[in-house]
Length: 471
Image (tube, one colour):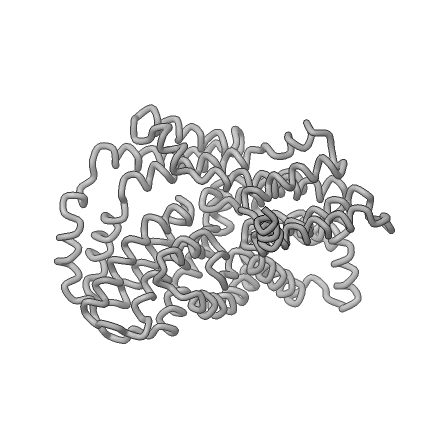
């Protein structure tokens, strides 16, 4: 019994440390313009960051910690705290996950493989480019976690073919797996349905800045960045792995044998694709009036009524920890705003900028992108956006900058800092195959982040301010 308790204390040591830190911050006397409630919110933020980084408990459990502390620290009544957990963004995230289950259920992986071989033949460079682009285009609508699950078997088949042709190659074969991981991660900012982080930013714009951005407007603002990043990702991968002019011999015959009759679409497949098209069209046309969440649930309802999805699929295959976690961090971000904690942090940041004599030019943009990337690399993109979103939007008010531009800087910067296997859902799924080393994520992620830093600065300086005038 005693040994068991000692083991649990050692295993959960970061949880106890985070709890102690939160209590110390909470009971410190308030000073200056920071209110007592604002200080309590920052205590919960500090604890959340430690729990996300070191994971002494499963990530969804952190949402329970946040809920309990928000009540115990007196941020609001139990009813107010629970109400802050529910929003259109949370329903949208849950609905998108259920729709993704319907797509995965149709076994699209083999059809994707057949489609790739039809386009690229035996050229390894075209195959890598095809995997990057196809993964990215699908992930930009369906979500990176779902597309990574679909494309991972495709990449593993490509690895198998490559090894049959070239044997042990010093790790070149893993380029196919890395193409899936980073292709999905890069494109996960293309549309609101591509990732939960996007829904979080939409919620903050609406609640904190009064900016209502629809599905189609998000695509206009962000999708050009995805279209630029995907070819750059291919160039980075080709530079690092250098597959040369080697080919994937017997690729076509292997794929035809592997795919068999599954290359033909069934009635259920066409129904599923049709429902996805209807859902995306509704997102683009009516989401500003009825919300993104209800539209996603319309798609889920159509899937269930047509029989392509059943409730057992939903209960077994949807990772319900994802919407629960994001509900909690959205709640925390809203309390940061209402208690003045976000404004206090933004004022401090603005004072530092004034002291450094940094205005709203390129140094200002570069610094914001760098902060977004570093925070995203430490916490992963979703929690980083959830915690920094209120601060960036208050920074826009303090400096007179456009909240749309600063929000996009945060979303892009936090999403393009994939240095570790846990930096994005797609990277985690591919890493779980056991065929990609941890250091490969750092090697590819660091180079891609350096390129992305320049691209994001250019977009933030020229394209996003131009588009913001018309929205």
